[in-house]
Length: 315
Image 1 (cartoon, rainbow, N blue to C red):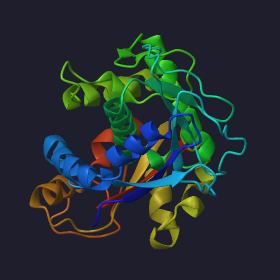
Image 2: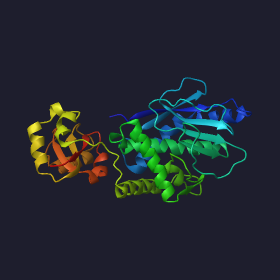
Image 3: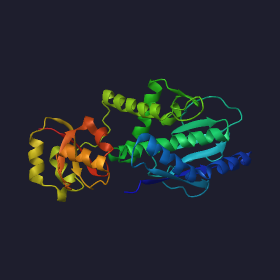
Image 4: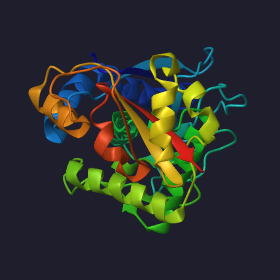
């Protein structure tokens, strides 16, 4: 299976008193996709994960028709064009202001339809900010949060909770502290004294965030009634309704995952792990297993060789 490919757009506002700065920002970022391919490969090795999504950046000037891939607006000091109409399927937008009067003002709330605003003191600073945002996008899909946060409203709520979490924990990054932003990048809190991302710290921060959500009892996932589990499953035609009903009858009330074997992995280690969990001697697509929702992150890394469906059960 090929890595998931995600497209995001950065918009440059050149209608400022210093368009040269914006031109320089574009020059630094225009080769981003070549740079990102290398860092994605490094990330694979570091995290020991086979499938990490690649985020391709597109670059546009303000004034073009913006679509749902729009994510970041870059401008010098003052934005001449404030967005008045947010693309319909965009969960969050970030303003990056390159300013000579730089202060570590942190993650701020954006203007009008923007969810966050940060200030950059240099072009290199801009590159770090972009890298932080892109890494969070990769990690969101890498850990398959999109299975549960599958609507724009849910993704927007997810972004807001990241900001609430970081503010509650008093995290501070090279940009400053979290103020009233509705979005933050977790990667921005994980750069070391050499401005490099500490990936071990980054993963630990995400794990802490997951635990925080569980403690807060935030219900961010799809709530599906028990009688609809079978009919709403995307592959219900390939699932025995009688067998599923029998499996459900032995469950206590709670939140669960319905795991189904899909594609046979070529990697022997992954094959053995899935086979052991399902009690398989040889691969069989369509085997079912119901597990507690709390174990979800031990299963996510086995995608796409399994499918995962979350449901709530009540007798």
